[in-house]
Length: 308
Image (cartoon, rainbow, N blue to C red; front, side, top):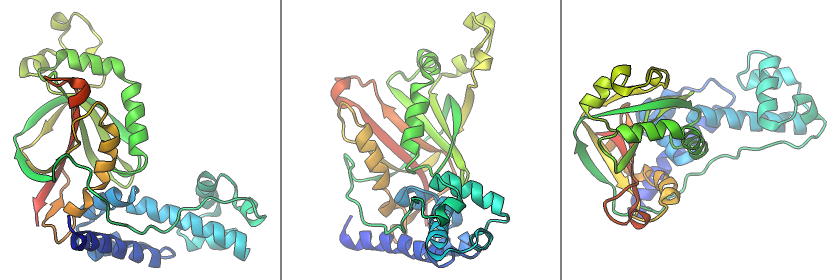
């Protein structure tokens, strides 16, 4: 990635941030915000999340509450006036959101209590932390079996790492069952889909053969009657073109994986030639390699794209 490419994508997201900032006291038109980045609304939402760590709607909410705190503390304005200015229909709904964000009530803010702040974002170019340059790759359809949880925030946002870690560390038994049934022992899969401003579905999954899937809930085959209570689902991943990148092979690639997600944006904004589409995103954890797993673990990120 050269400096010109970095400037291009950073400028486009910067333009979108400028549009949102100019309309914090208005009803936000996210289609117009997307136009400033030459993107569809879906593509804009996803790439904004990669670059900024929050969805556009979450960014607007946090910035409005930051400015509302300033208006109350420094200008002494009435709570109802500030609430209406920043899009809240009632003082009660504003007070709930304000207290959740700042940890204090609007009346306490007027008396000078300490406020939280979410500063205006200024996207900067980021170094790539990939084992090799990202590549465009068409992959065959894939059938997985897994279980999900609804995550909040952006798919590449600041909350994903925490939610992902908690989900993995509190559902070990389900992972062991899937791994025991898996026909692909070396790899684990994560699937992200159904993303919107409220969050996204996050699946932990494994690849099972068709016979295992067929008999998964048959107690005469499994010997147990609780399989249908575990929330397992069959996940159909269609044949798809992906932007694929991967961490270097190492003992613990999770830190690189987190940083790598943030380095993808330059490949997803004009003039780079590809756009994200609303299809399942894959993360493949090559966790149990044929060689020295302690040195050869790596993680692939596969983002569904189409050529502009």
